[in-house]
Length: 200
Image (cartoon, rainbow, N blue to C red; front, side, top):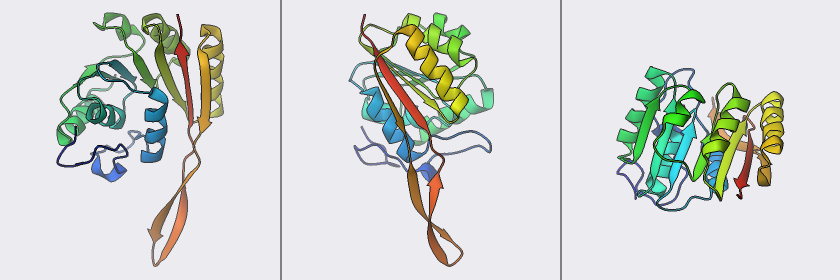
């Protein structure tokens, strides 16, 4: 599926095509591509995105998997509205935005997920534990961390939950930018992407 704003079947929508709000995080295009590859998406899946922020992952997944059901969870009303607007911008109709806090709201969601992406949230350990309870067998879990503390919490939780086939990647991306009359390479903030499977 494609939209008039992004008429391609490949992921990697440029960041500036998304509507944004000051202070609200956006998964940069290159990091988004890593997250999508670690999710190993399949058609007709249920996908949860916890801490969906600007809504970049739900939009990308919605375009790639138009027959899947994507649940975007965001506790802030204004940010949840931003996700809906970005879905509308890209004509994505298979994203449901849940305006609530994880992990408390997860037990009330109607369907257990095949894939879960956690892009933020506190308390992270409690969110991971609750997600693991609901994740279907053979399901995949992807979580991101931008700090050493976040990396430690996710790694420790993965070990405690006995997540299998764990992969950890740290992004290292530089983009060409114009500053004044010069073109320079500017670093995109590095991000850890951790993923693994629930085999039973």
